[in-house]
Length: 234
Ligand code: 9EZ
Image (cartoon, rainbow, N blue to C red; front, side):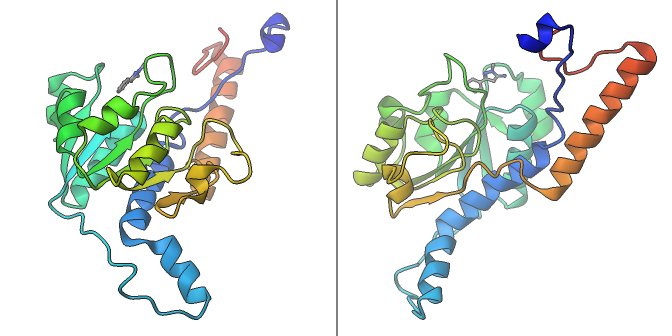
C-alpha cells in the first residue's frame, strides 16, 4: 500500500525458486521415511541404533500431490522419477494437463484414501486453510506420511498432532508453520515423528541467483519498454 501510494511497482519472481522448493519437499519426504535426522542425531551421540530406524521403501507406492501449480508439478515429476504412482488433485488443472504430466488427476477424497505419501502444494487462502483437517485425516489410510513445504496452515496443526498420536500418520514433515518462527516447545516441532526445517524451501544458492536475475530483467524491461511482469500492485 505504501509503495502503491508512491507509484512504486512491486515485483516478485515466482518461478525462480520452484525447482528448489520442489526438491525440498522431496528431501523432507526421504528424510522422513528413512529417519535421517534422528539417525544422524543418534550417531552423533556415539550410538548405532539399526533396529530403531527401520524405514519405508517408496518405489511402487502411491504419492498424493495436492496442488499441481509450478511447484506441485515438479514434485509430481520427481515422484515419478522415484518410481512412485502419482495421484494429483487440483481443481484448476485440466485432464489434458494431467495426461501431459503423466499423473492421475482424481478427487481429493480419492487421493486421500489411496495415498501412502501426501505432499501439499497449494497457495494459502480461505479455500485451502485447514484443507488437511481432522476430516481429511479420517479419509487417509493408516500409516501415511505427510509433507507441508508450501504454506503454514494448509495442514491444521492441531489435527495433525492428533493424527500423529493416533498412528493415522506414520510421520509428518514441515517446512512451514502457522506462526513463524513457531513458539518455543511447539508440539509438532517437538514430536518424535516430525521432521522439520525453518522455512528453507526456497533457500538455495541457485534459487537466490535465479530470483535476483529474474527481478533484474523485469526491472530492465520496464525501464526499456514499460513492460510490467509479476507485479503485486499494478
Ligand atoms: C486448491 C488448489 C489446489 C489451488 C490451486 C490454485 C487458487 N488455487 N487453489 C485446493 N492455484 C489444490 C487444492
